[in-house]
Amino acid sequence: GAGVSQSPSNKVTEKGKDVELRCDPISGHTALYWYRQSLGQGLEFLIYFQGNSAPDKSGLPSDRFSAERTGGSVSTLTIQRTQQEDSAVYLCASSPGPPGSNQPQHFGDGTRLSIL
Amino acid sequence: DAKTTQPPSMDCAEGRAANLPCNHSTISGNEYVYWYRQIHSQGPQYIIHGLKNNETNEMASLIITEDRKSSTLILPHATLRDTAVYYCIVAGSARQLTFGSGTQLTVLP
Image (cartoon, rainbow over all chains, first blue to last red; front, side):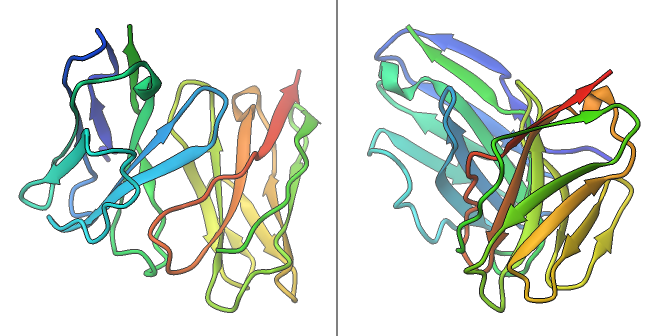
């Protein structure tokens, strides 16, 4: 079956521009997660959605980052006024149930964001 | 969530079983052990998870010690495509998965 789909797979943009990253979770998965992975680093948690709600946004690195989810499905991560330190691979994951339900997260292949 | 300790690297001959160890001595009663792997330029791939009983699926087997302080992921017949970084993660109610450094498994022809 279809896995988590992320687009674009690669994005190169100039410093100061806004970018939107899209995630299509596995159909029926109620929980959706955003992480980022910098070169040679571990995964940094950004935000998670249960349905359309994001109970905790404290993982977002700054107020330039925002995310939304509509219809309990597609999610968009927006970075405004991009900076070079935003360069990373942005990963999305989804799971059938909420955190604590012990159901695994399934990841997409990410969007590789490069800020010039 | 409990911290895990894994060897930084391991080699395995193609066709042989790969046994990847993980220590999680501070695991608590409601925390599961998850295994993921990441091949270069791809997202992490879920492999298997378990609480206290041994688990097997089409990809691998997971052996958890009786005291739950350690576990072993077994790839029964390793292939070159199994070369990846393997992550052992202990997670309970926390919303995010915390990935450590993992084990770089290299399957040799």
